[in-house]
Length: 68
Image (cartoon, rainbow, N blue to C red):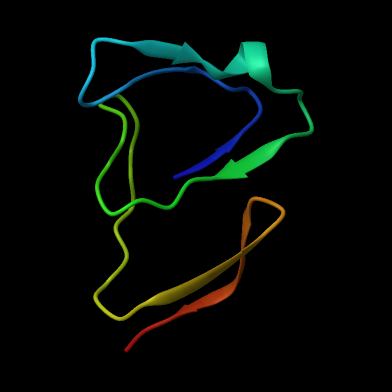
């Protein structure tokens, strides 16, 4: 999951809790979240392929993902 301005509110997938990311970030922030399962219920998560490697620099995908 990559996030950048404008940040939205996200609802956790396993708890009845929402987080307003705009309240905790600035317009210049970028964030990448890597998890084994989607953490939020209202955002689009992009799965890695088995054996795939991705490199993030400063919250952004760097280069082309490398498959197994």
